[in-house]
Length: 538
Image 1 (cartoon, one colour):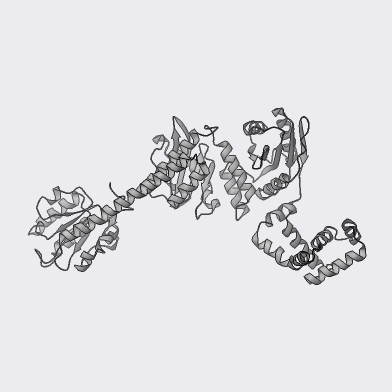
Image 2 (cartoon, one colour):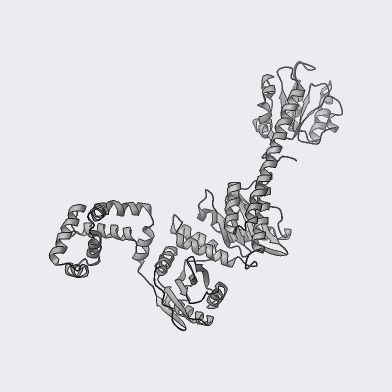
């Protein structure tokens, strides 16, 4: 087995060997030569030395085979370089008392790293030490390759899902990994230490360009490397997911070193594992269900640091929100709805419609859905009505919960969460449209409710009242929430709480004392309102 350049022993490693350190060895070449990989060690003290090497060797000589004149030495060095010698070590003190200047100059001219010793050194010890190191690294590499084999075979044997395969590949390589379909839409990714939005910025355009550049190569069975058109310092390597005459998509790895045996091995095994996963899937000819389920999961979980970042990731997934009319919806039926059927009727509304549909994670009779259409052609309410009419084509009774107010990913997430908490009202026949719109403030509050900084604000501000309720089994938080819902009418608040005005004012006094606020002051009232809303969410 030949070690790759990333794994091979280098001149730097060899110079650090005790036997050479003890001999006062020096490298008389540029420091860049320290990274020169060494495949093997060979002693050359005969005129035929250049004929006995295969390339990549460190040559050891006493100088006897170099020749006695400068032209002879030039010819010998040329033979070694032409045969692929990686470096030359000359022992001083046996044949040569000092290094001839012409040897130093010609080695520099031919780019051959030159090493000299300060005295005699046993070549046997050098060859044993280097060969032992090379073989040890080869053995370690075999062990690592075997471990990679076993890890992927174990995943395939246990029918691991594509998500797990992508995550495992990223962990093995310690690099970001992206899986795309043939329309250049991102199905899955493992971002590593990168921000997802930076990793996937402009993905469709870049991927289409790479595919065009390599279209003449056919299907890529061995990874190839391409440069990021937006950043010349970033490279990607990709391999096709293919099997039994079917091409599913491509697996990309950011910053992969294809001269590294382990990287190549891992990418090939990942492609094979994904191919087997596809062949065993219920719908092996399409990634659509997986792509949309993962896309909706990203919307629902809000795992992004910025709204723009979330938009970028959704766009890489094939769902656009800028300049679009958006709907968040949930379909409920007494029977399990087919995702393919739902998707097809929604896409039939208009060529510019984009959708993501997936079964509710806790109820297979519910379908979660987000819809996007060109806002210049559609008003959100018109899109909702067109959707209701299209759903009638499924021929089953459906409750169509819809929010027409979302203006971006955050609003979509908030609306979907809100709908999930509503009880079902499935009609006996037809499609019953039920609106679940809320104002933007609710969406914002619901989003901020997940932020630990906002959670700390709410918890810290309200802590005295929360502790009082816990210790005294009281309900001052309910009283405070009701007061904030009726800012201009204490009578309305008392009526809703079923309290007399006297009892309400007593509670208000306690709340103001505990929180050190005055509810008649606008600033205090606003601060408490924000704390309560962020504490409970929308």
